[in-house]
Image (cartoon, rainbow, N blue to C red; front, side, top):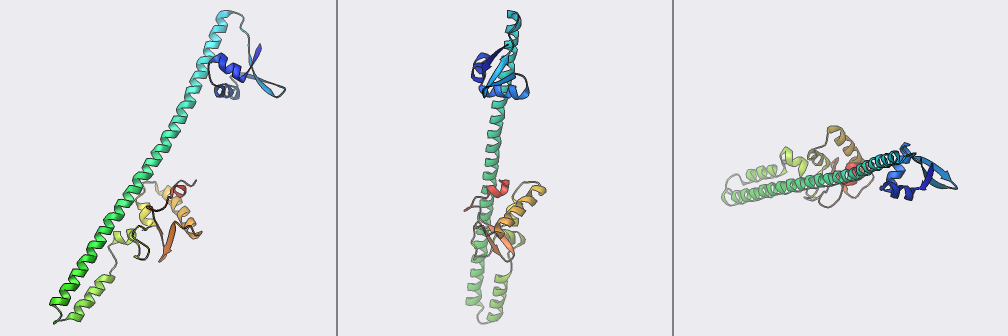
Length: 218
């Protein structure tokens, strides 16, 4: 039996040092520690054929293990990229939804102004006070059910949306949404500047802030 250092064993089998360490951890290779130095114990073959076959088998096994490590690293990279692209797509959907809601909001305001002008110019001689009361009443009416969740109070700003609306756009399972909602609320209660509380609702601004830490819980 002869012994080799980790580097010599890696060169001998034609693989990386990490592959040699993996074999030692699994018990595929014997390990000897002398004076704090780790050696790989390799049995000497009694004949050339047996030695050649043993070395070939070990090199093939170590090569497969090395390839598996490389593929696992590539899979990790692809999974991270997939997560990044999914979050980017969701942010684009949120921004587009905000833009659409803003267009409808501005359109409704323009229509109300036109109605007020018509009421003032052409109906001033008859029931002007009643017309204005109706206009004011309409002005104070809440926006439809969708806008109520998407568009926050005007004092907050048009880029802010409710936590409820934000979670509706996520395609996560309900169990995951529940955990995300809990983390967001906890951050808001701790005074995280990325959140605003108003009328017992929590608002966030995906256009201005990053929330990936709270989405992943890391």
